[in-house]
Length: 173
Image 1: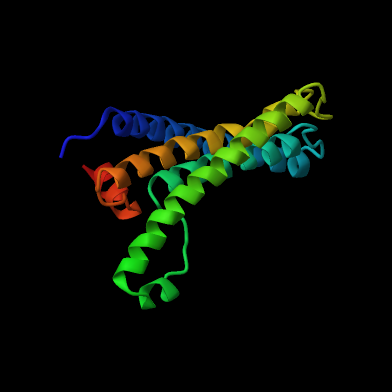
Image 2 (image 1 turned 60 degrees about the horizontal axis):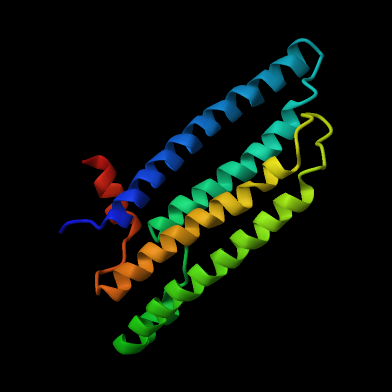
């Protein structure tokens, strides 16, 4: 089946996000090791590393959550859903897609307002705007909103929902 241009765009964005998270994870490992070595081998801790790692883990977690959102890989409690009649199960699955997209859209807008309100604040160790760490919220939740729109369009077209297993199989190709 041919993918829509939105799905191809979302795949491209997901791949870029995955690449960014992998690089960010590698950088965090290097910085953490540098911090440990400097503190215990040279008795001179890096002044900026803890703040950098704290902000980086937030970016890493939220960007990773956006990838999970695209793949419908978030945890869910399915035991109760499996007990429901098939029509009700399908209805709830569809409602969750719409409500989740609305929710992440609201969080993206609220996050953008937070970034604007904190842009003038400067972090103590890194000396950067507090808007930069907080930008993880609108960036990640905007991606989730985009992916939610893609899921809604798939639902309207009657296509089955994407799953994390499908995404994993696609990566192995």
